[in-house]
Length: 353
Ligand code: FA5
Image (cartoon, rainbow, N blue to C red; front, top):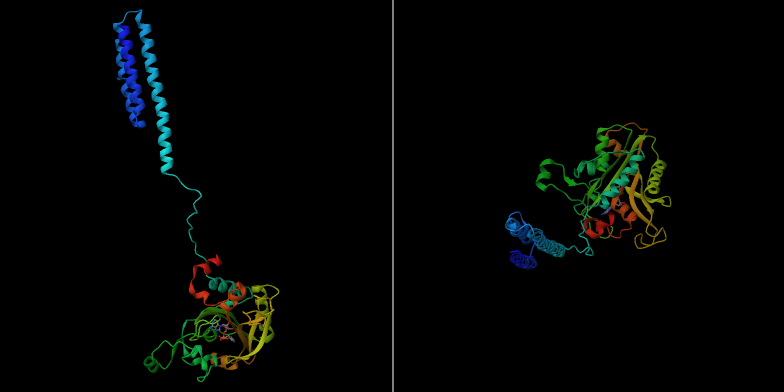
């Protein structure tokens, strides 16, 4: 009897171990575990036959069953380890991340150089005691020209230089031409209309000119107007303010040069140059070999401008200036073409992150 059971168990062990060897997944293995070693499994069924054996046979029977069970249990855990390793390897292979691949670049926005320059320049004048005023981009003829002592015959009023907005019919009806402001100076007229001296402000903004585009001229650009009106304001104060500004914006080595100029709304007037920062004043293509670049116009407020604003006090004087923001930024960042500010070429803009 014992011998027969031993044979049967040997066969069961062989059957179980070969089924275990053939199992292709840990799930399949779990089923075999239940089938052979489970509470109602094949080996458990054998234990119930213990009662049919004599007392002498029982220890040997127990030994044979345990050996067979241990063999099957070892086969199960060996196969389980092998399958787990194989499954893990397959998963790793499937989900493999190549850490040597270049990362996907998430582009972040950057401040446009014009905005950066507008803010930096404005901040300097705010620190020097100026406030900020604003005026409309779509302007009327009175504020852009008449109030600034720019006569009807002035070439700036020509359609060649100015973008007019209203049709000739609308103009005939209203009697006032509407245009895109050609400079920020109309903010002078608008502010003086509503405020009495002392006045000290800057007016940053966009201006429009109907002119030929080249490396230093564009049809849309930005200016910052400055106006200081009080009793006994002097030309020396104007010069000092502009010199201060140049040194703060470009560094202590920067200098300014004033040349006689003409603007109908200032008298005397000056064209203001700044040391060419590209060549340090030695002469290069940006400064056309002169060592200086013209960046702004300035002067003492013309009496006719005060008259148009209704200022009558004879002790009132004032200075005004209008600087070209892109021209200043060109010098600061050593950019050789104003068109780059408007092309929106990402390779250019990325350099200002
Ligand atoms: C004026 O526009 C005067 N309103 C400035 C002024 C204000 C003078 C107050 C006196 C008192 P002008 O046309 O020169 O002046 O322009 C001033 C600055 O704007 C120039 O020095 C230059 O830096 C810039 N600028 C002029 N035209 C262009 C253009 N087409 N593209 C880019 N920048 C320009």
